[in-house]
Figure 1: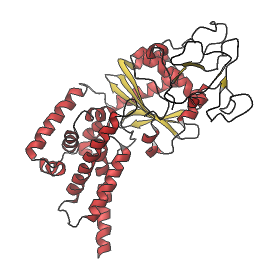
Figure 2: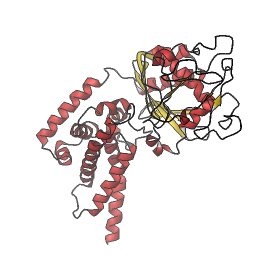
Figure 3: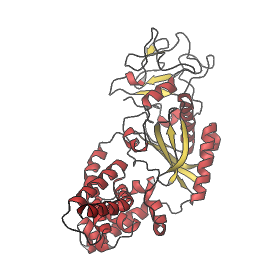
Figure 4: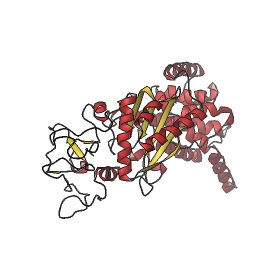
Length: 410
């Protein structure tokens, strides 16, 4: 008899698992933390001595309380996070409700999750339960441990903050998909003018690596600057053999970038408004990509992108070496600028040029807290003197970063 009851409890929980995960993810903005909250909910459910009147209400309240506690501690960690913080990418929402499809899709977007970050933990939980999943205030009051009147006030404040940050007009799904198709086609061709036409004037490019993967030094703003950086980045992807697959990321157009062996490198999510892309958000933190499959070695790919065509990371310094240790170096020919394919490096805080003919350690060999910036490939010899900074093929990359473009050393 007991086994039958346990099997029934397990079946009911599994049926509600997508709902519980969706609630926790929207409160936390983290796939891993949401999965942990759901698992903790199951353990508490199994150990409960009482049988709830409504399993759905009981489990939803439990996962909400757990998520609120986790969020309070996570806020402290996020204040110390290296660089911009973005939610963990989610490719598909496991919970579907045809009657709430619009609310579910809107609340899943990266832009909406970033707006939710502005709310207090209680406001966020009340907003998610009420506005997204249409829970009644009596159920919400039980979940957050407040009176119904207090929950109504929390809902009003949360709705006011969310409405203030939302765009007035949003693109429909078909328009977003068409725009994304044109965007990634232009990126594949490296067509800077076509990319610029698809970007809003105030577009921003933001990357989240948590200091654990190569990433842009800071956010880039403006159509010209972003288009230039995208073309520069596309060249690095090509040299490293990285490809991408267009898909939805958090319910919005985006892509998953993969290393040659298929491992996940990073994700992009596009925020579309009024027929233009107004934000590109990249997540490269390996801790945020693990739920999507094996994660690529982003630093190794960055070194591969720096190498001349036809050379492998193991051909650094004369005399051999696998190029993986701190001693590995790349030798730039003496007495002349690097050839067209050679990487040009600028060490932050030092004068240009970086001593042609001297072995320059790759980024992984630079101990913290020093940082190294990497510039686009140099033009062939004869187009500039050896003491002139390398030309920027896009004309926008160095301007976007004030001369400090590049990746951050680990």
